[in-house]
Structure formats: C-alpha cells, structure tokens
Image (tube, rainbow, N blue to C red):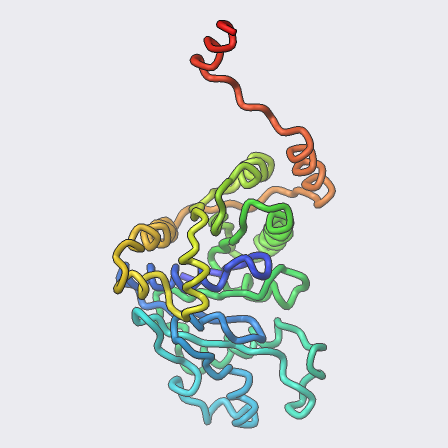
Length: 295
C-alpha cells in the first residue's frame, strides 16, 4: 500500500506522518517513509537527525545507480520505520537546473527509480510519501502517481482548508488516470472543527480523525521524537498515540475512499466567508427556554 500525505505548509504534516508511520509499524507492518521536501526534515522525529538525501547521494556517485546500496539511502528510525529523504532538485554541477528553478517531480521520480533499482519498493507493506506543502504544480503532485490513497492534513482554519481544497482537486484529476482515492482529512491540533465540518458538508469526504489542541504534539517536533517514543517515558501521552493508531486502523482496512467533488476556490471562499460572517446561533436547550420564559 502506498500513501501520500499532503497539507498546507506548517500544518504539522511531517509530525503527523511520522506518528502514522509508527502506528502502522505497531500494527505489524513494514513501513518506509519518504520525505519529499528539499528541507529533508520529514523523518527527523523518527531518526533524531537530518539524514542524507537521495539526490545528494546520487550526485556523489555521479548518478551511477549501480554504485548505491540500500544502506546508503535508507535509514532505520524509531519503531522500525525505515526512512528516506528525497531532497531538492540538483544544481547545475549535476546537470540539473539552477537551485530554486527545478521541479519537485524530478526528485520524486529519481527517488522512486533508485528505490525500484534497489528492489526496495517490494520489501515494504506500506510506503508513505510526506509531500511538501500545497500542490502548486505537477511536480509536487508526482507522488500521487504512485499512491493508492491520499490523506490531507488540515486544521480548522481558512487557509488550511483552501490548501486542502486544491489538494482534493489534484486528487480528482489524478484519479482520472490512476487508481487513486482520497482516504480523508486529518484535523491536526485544533480546538474546534466547525469549519472542517462545513467544508466536508460541501465537498463530501471522510474525516479520519481530528486531534485536539495538544501542546505535546508540537513539542515532539522540537524534541525530535514521535509521540510514541515520548509516551515510553510519559504514559499519560498514550491517549494521543491512540489517535494515530485509529488512523492506521482505518487505512489498513483499505477503505473505498472518494474521488472529491469539484469545488472552485471562489465557491469555497463564499461558503467559508458566509459561515464566518453569519454564524448560526445554537438552538437553546429546553432548560434555557424555560429560564427565558420565567424572566
């Protein structure tokens, strides 16, 4: 099974990905997480350090694939999760475009090519792509070419849901030619879910989980540890791990998933703006109605 995790930059996507990877490993699966971000920090909370990237390793070997071994690019992280960082587009010295001018799709393609050469794709039960920020071009959508499911990380905010809507549109387009489905949304560190629910009402899709506003989730990134590793020393965090285990269980059940409906940005803007400007007042309870009658 291959998963692609997307979401607005800074939403906590990599932290979520690492914890889901460990949750899948706890369910007995052999997991490979591939970071698809030039910062190459997707797997940081699994390994505790920034591992070398595949592109850097390829450059060192002058792109001689036959000179690269699995241990050169695949690192073992916490919980037995194996980790790969794709890296950024190579510079002109490697025959590639100038820094900042290349395409993320090239890097993903080279990463997949090398891992197939190493027969790595056949060794794992689950391969999880953690993808940079929003889908802004075909290159950043490249992992969807290989995925069975896409998961979108969001919060209850305006910007994150706009990013989620663009990602959903990319899933819809890719699903025309690939056996790809959207598994659903994951709400991350949010005290409310009213906007998420409003969006899902307009563009029907599953909500896999909504994690509450737990400071330890943010702190785990700073510490370079997953919530599961932190829970070994602080059992009070086990309930947070259960959220990720629930997501893993839903994915392993191989849900049907959805092909998202079309929702143009202007329609989404109107929908969410109206929700902000004209909030629906909650209906009073029977006790509150009785109190009002007695006033």
